[in-house]
Image 1 (cartoon, one colour):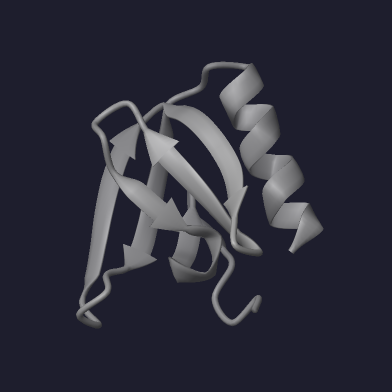
Image 2 (cartoon, one colour; image 1 turned 180 degrees about the vertical axis):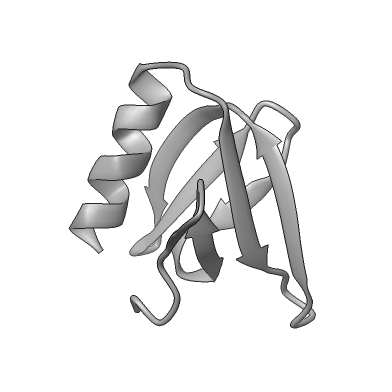
Length: 73
């Protein structure tokens, strides 16, 4: 998990646009592009927030900028 966290922190620090593909809470898959504005640990779960207001658990992320992270947790 630390590699995905480091990667996300780097993208956030560089203010790069990120394309994230992730599994929604109802099991669907969606993709969004934007900036990561906040990362925090909530009850032992790494959470990211985008500039569009989306809050995504790191364990929901399937792909970041084309790089696969499926089944990392």
